Length: 149
Image (tube, rainbow, N blue to C red; front, side, top):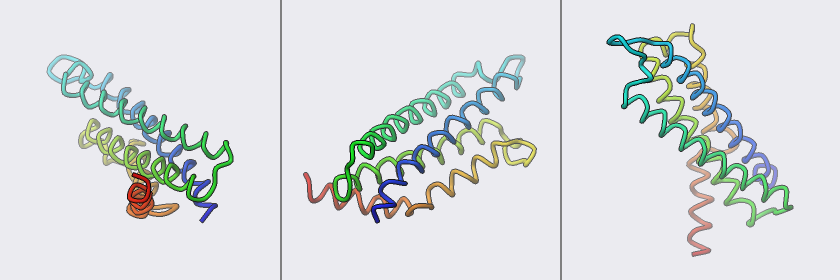
């Protein structure tokens, strides 16, 4: 189990990287795409989606950094498990949400294998499953909360 505790923040970091990559692709796409005589990026609803994607990714990034600092500090076992689980679970859930929203911004072009965003979408799902599903992470976190608070 200790190997999982140390690798889960790495999976979280992969989630953050995936989310950031999905944002970058979506921003490039909506800047170039035109509708009703203007760039799609000028629409308030699109900007709000991008704002949410950026906020969630930044929050995930900081949680992963925190977990990595705990690992670097030498924590193990019950001290490490909850923060490692939080980082993995939150960051990979964010990756899935951000990839889903990015795919939405691409519209029907998003599901085409001609666009990389569809691969990000599939990869995000895998991150929620490997190194223990996010349901398992919630079990670890929940037990910690019950025993600590």
